[in-house]
Image 1 (tube, rainbow, N blue to C red):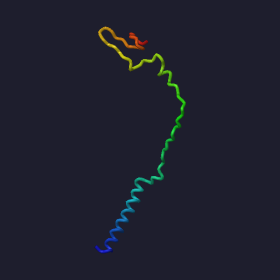
Image 2 (cartoon, helix red, strand yellow; image 1 turned 180 degrees about the vertical axis):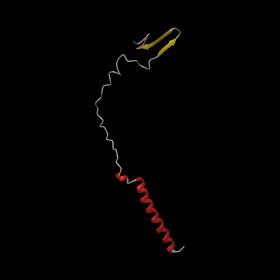
Image 3 (cartoon, rainbow, N blue to C red; image 1 turned 120 degrees about the vertical axis):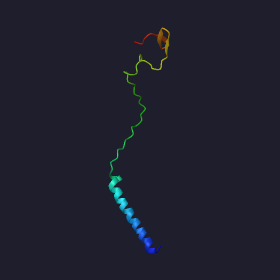
Image 4 (cartoon, rainbow, N blue to C red; image 1 turned 45 degrees about the horizontal axis):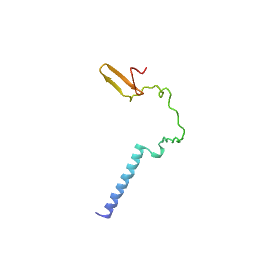
Length: 87
């Protein structure tokens, strides 16, 4: 290949790259013009908030208590005592 052929290939490749750049910029847009949503961090404090009393109260049912089912007896252990119901 001659020097002029190599120069022509480089010129054609450069023009192709420029055309591709401008087409891609039209399709995807400029990233600097896109709006961004930035979340701010909430500061950590040593304040402890009490849990909701409607959910966490003394007489609430505990789903992890042991349930004994056998024969004619059905009872739930509530605070270590077998009770018929927790009403």
